[in-house]
Length: 235
Ligand SMILES: *Cc1c(COP(=O)(O)O)cnc(C)c1O
Image (cartoon, rainbow, N blue to C red; front, side, top):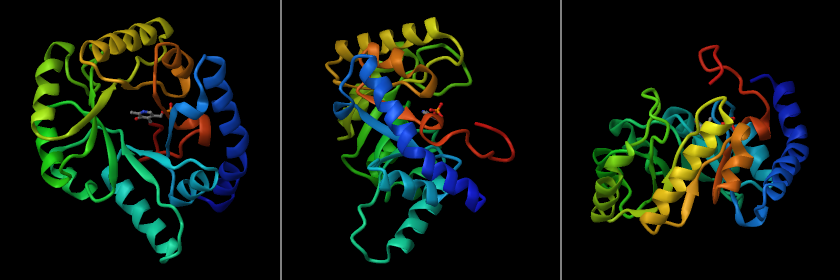
């Protein structure tokens, strides 16, 4: 990414962060008790650095290659200094064969939607913190386990010794009603399984997610502006 773009993203960040925190507050949650995962996918390590400098330590990534590259770049830049490293959250669709590469970095896995994936995580990161991702919208292009299979998935993940923190979902694009329904059904499922954490809400549906009980929100463009293209496309 061009240096001037990085500089703009970094200089805009404090105001954008204040606005995101105000949105959380206005929607009825305490911003200090809501985990804000700063989604840096599509941006370079300099933007992760800017996030850390702004006090954002929970960093979300969707692609294993990007995660590895950024973690390595930050490590190198820190060069043994006492910089606090990011707490990496993996939020994207994940293939089993990528788990091993991501495992050294990831503190929390948000997109665990099948037992075979959980087994691979348990193998390379025993006892890891995970969220079970539920497909609450029935959209086939989205990840997530069908609600009917959630009980079996949760039981299996626990049997693997994973620390199941809660449930995660992605609301439907462009439908406020749809998002509210998706988030509400996720909350009901979490209550039924005595799970406290709800990872839901992105830039466009943050308020709805908070109103429906999100404890973790995953915000990208609201903090950093539009993403530079991956293969020339927004994602
Ligand atoms: C990209 C992404 C986000 C952040 O999206 P924004 O709309 O930029 O806030 C959150 N969650 C997941 C799973 C994502 O892939």
